[in-house]
Structures are given as structure tokens and as C-alpha cells.
Length: 106
Image 1 (tube, helix red, strand yellow):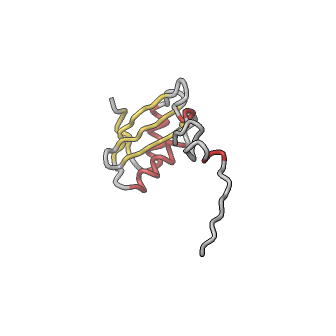
Image 2 (image 1 turned 45 degrees about the horizontal axis):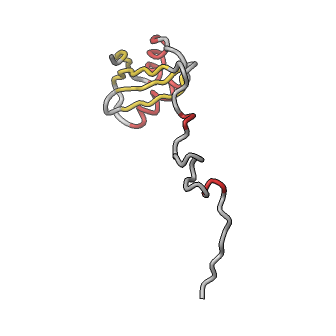
Image 3 (image 1 turned 30 degrees about the horizontal axis):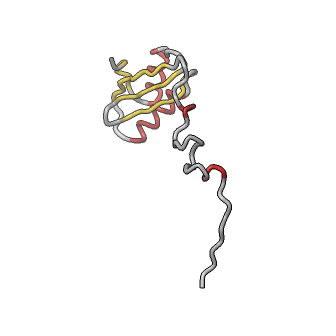
């Protein structure tokens, strides 16, 4: 014989989703803020996840940067920021990480 206990469902479970009232796992608030800028840079010398982390960490410290995604396999670093960034600041951050900024991807 087994016992079965009914537990009250949390409010978030009653609409069929644990994520949001609309049933989506993504919030509409996650969209890029109005006026945000996305720039893709080419960085040479990245070969692994450690490289990606080092470049991302340095660029993330630049004022106004909201997110950074570095991909060693392509050499591309996608940076979201509140306004256009000074390329010299990005170059200095990449240099500090030990890599070379080749330029902005067109």
C-alpha cells in the first residue's frame, strides 16, 4: 500500500508554465534596451574557452557594456553596449587579455 499526498500547486504552476504568466520561458523584458548598440569585433589569437573568458572579462569592464560573447572558433566577439564604444578602449581591453583586435566586422 502506498500513500499519495496532494500538494497545493504554486501560482506559477497553475498556468502551465514555471517561467512566466504568458506561458513563455522568456521574458519580454529581456529584449535589448532602446538605443542599445551591438558591435562584432574580430580578435586574433583565441583558441579555447579560457581565451573567450579572458577577452569577455576584459571587455565587460568597459563602461556601458551590457554583454559580451566571444567565440574562439570564429575569432568573433559580439558586444552589446548602451552606446557605441571607443575602439581604442576595446583594443586596450583585448590587449590586456593577451590578444589582438583585428578590427570591427563589417
